Image 1 (cartoon, helix red, strand yellow):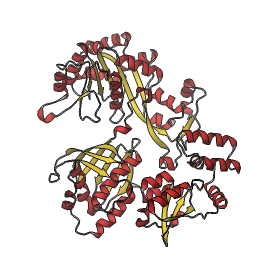
Image 2 (cartoon, one colour):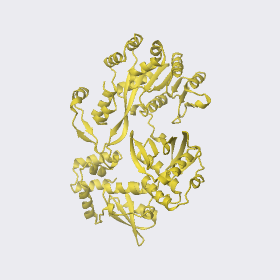
Image 3 (cartoon, helix red, strand yellow):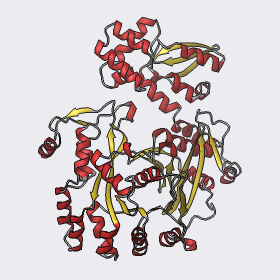
Image 4 (spheres, helix red, strand yellow):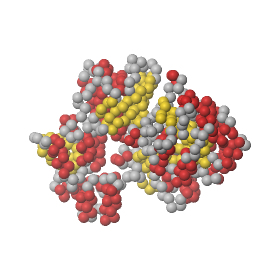
Length: 565
């Protein structure tokens, strides 16, 4: 991003003084202000390029009409191209022609000249053309395309060839787009892994069908179709994933679990891998566990101030249970890990029982469940009670045995954190009783219950104001009469989805004496929830609509991800 370009556009009255001030704030926030203005249609891309072309006497080109050769792309590392907002397009008699978006940042050409040892000439392109070219030539999908072409040329490529090159535990992956020395299958798999990290995916689905072999990635909670691989590569690609995750490649009839650890640009990333036999081959699903993306700060998770106060009240008690509920993938583990990190003091003994252990936490004893040898949640929890614990995290209460031991631990002076799969806070009480735990034990042991959901946040660069739906007008007005709502639009920053990132919404039940008496009196879940709301509990739907009024999520997202009160 260039302050010089902002000053030039302000001087030439292409942007107003107020927009120049806004540009300064965007620069401080780490954003490119001109790209932001282009995405928001404040500046026309065509007019911007025409002005810069005339001002700096540089030719402008339509990059979509160029087919850039792989050897030209290979001259400039992908990381350098992204850093400089420049992309090489052709060579001509020892001169490298480079397409740029910002001619006030000509020192970028010096960096490329130094890196390539070639004379460099510049041409102008639009931001959108640059984004499309980077996606095509430097994204993980581009390296996969090259690998597929190479695979088809090499008819003697076999799975055994891949095995010989897959012996190390830590796999180093080059993100610069230079994979010519690697076998095609290795390049394909590396491209899939790096593309998932570049897109911020949480899961990768590698799926074989009768006439198709596709890869989908879960981004911000939604599965997107990313690429399709030729059928003839199916067995080799699946074998490569299994080899990297230390699975038995000779066994394809039963599900297997494994783990891949890779290093990308000096950053270590773990993938939890599962293979499953399907009708047309093995499907492989990888869960991405990047500790760098793990947010373990309760202040930043999405709690409303009053909710955070109640949650902290529950986890700072010397004993009792704090339960977090919600569907798979709703962020329950992150919430509990965040609570544990606040409790992680040198004078306390903290332990966890998990299946599986997703992240390693410094200073906390973590136990991995292994049913094959009889190490279950209940047996591990019993063992931990003889380890002088202060606080215990139980990955999930799945059955009566685990629930009984957790309740006994909470009643004998330990703080127990755990999760259940229920729709809301009050349903958790019903679930525990249905498991066989006596109501008086539930009321005596539970401090508080939290229900949560993850909502996709609107892209800050392209969200647009929208009208409030009639059916929610009264509810939203009661929450905040001055609030505004926004809808997704789509831009280059969010891959035209309109959403980027996620935020959690919560429902926190403070288990008051009044509510405990209702449980002991065998009152219905509806009656208990109504009383909890009267006592001030903010429901999931209300929390989500508040996020909509803050402009963080759309009303449609808030309504679709939460149940009606």
